[in-house]
Length: 293
Image (cartoon, rainbow, N blue to C red; front, side, top):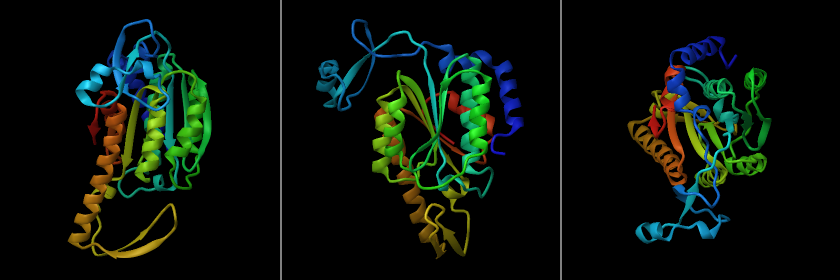
């Protein structure tokens, strides 16, 4: 079963030991931010097509030559939106847990903290399209529904963040805290399009990239038969030192681009690997800011 009962017990212990620390780092312990006019601006974010042109801060533009809009604070409950990648590429494990199981467990950890703060969360799985959506609600019964969806998920297809974001954002009614968990192994243009769309509907956004260590290290030698989980195509390759260097370069380039997109939209970026202890990884994410596993 992807979500282990022992991990839930660890979360209960975490709640008792570090309740104040976790709640202060998370939405349940703070006021949320929505945006309007008539009160003092609290910060800025990059201008997106469709934003109110009157909110552009031209003083910032004169310094940076980039368009930013002023954001304003208003009290309102903050809803957590959790999206977990359920594409075929998440059905992989070489060392440690399967990527989907790891991502699903982290999703439940976010949701556990949310319900204990008596706040709402929404939950969805996605791949080529959005699927298995739980509308925002609160309480333990809602958490059990989310766990059941994760534990019985069928992984299939490729990832289309652009398509899924277009579908999901139609259901977001207020500015929210959005958390996306995925390996982000998809074309960067589609990924960028989708994350930018999500950012327009979020007060805060966290991007959690979940990878197997072998995907980073390429920890095999000699001739290896690779099979594309999403397409089924297979190929035998000799892993020469040159091949490994080239592979590392491409992986680092892609992951750096994902992080760059997150920085552009003001989202926190976290990279974790499935050999990391789950609770430690979650606490690291809760600490905030850009983090590498």
